[in-house]
Length: 387
Image (cartoon, rainbow, N blue to C red; front, top):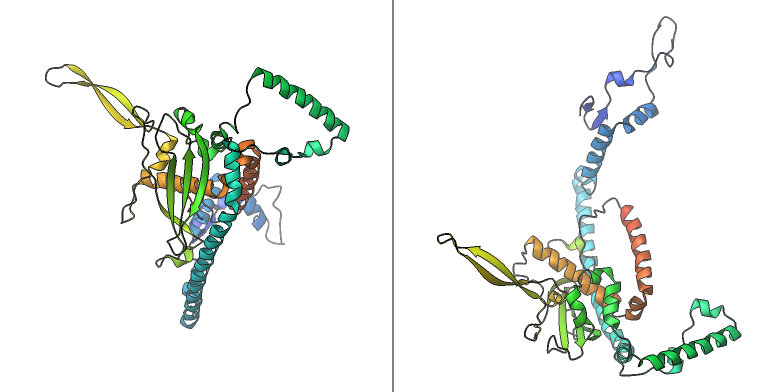
């Protein structure tokens, strides 16, 4: 560093920067005229903190310390190190018990999924107009309505009735809840980022999304099932995406275990109607013949951005080695699959109305605060997607 001297791990200012003005100096003892008091530790600290070079050097050193061994373990007597190793072996056993805990959680999820399903089926019936809810089922008191007097409520009901009658005369009532799932997707940033304009006409035909868990005794996994009404784009009525999970500590790194981890996923084949495959596009390219100098137009089919690429994830080789692009695609895929399973399917109506989005924003703010307070948090490093 220019103008600074480094002693060991400390950075000190040069002597000239430690001098003070004549007004601050004074004779400190008889027979020693001109003896000047050096700055106090506090004064030195203030000077250092005002120098950008010192701050940069200090930050660089602190960054190097985060997450690195302190050297304390190396300094321990051999007999103490042996006991610490015994504690580590206990910690590995704890990780295996934790894995069993998550396996039982998975079984509980499967059990309660069966209890939720009749409610989700009824939701689907209402959305696609297979069932018309009763007056009692449609009653909902918002916070604002609770503050109204009975007479005011009656007045509003009468007004609403008149308005409804007018609308009835103008046009026929829509069936069910049109574009329910498309609206849900558009309201969630994680999903809306995947949507293209050409995806929307197809997603208007999406009638339901279900989560299915692996059967007892089978390897841990879950499937997302997308149900479509008959449409002009493809012949499938069901598109699926299955996520394989692992709930056991890695032998090479058992202390990293923090719950079930998504290990891979498989999609399905979409039977596109001729000329309707929006995951591909045709481009025309001009090529010039080197010898003759003639120009010809070549037509080429290339991948096209679409939500429906979600059903054709990259294949994971047996070695597990992926290029950076495929790794990034899979990481995003795992996050999306996990989010649909954990948040979208259980709380779809709240994402449709936008209420769940406000809750997510609040949660995100709290999490960001916690992460910023964590000295080991690195925003550049993505985490695993957990069950």
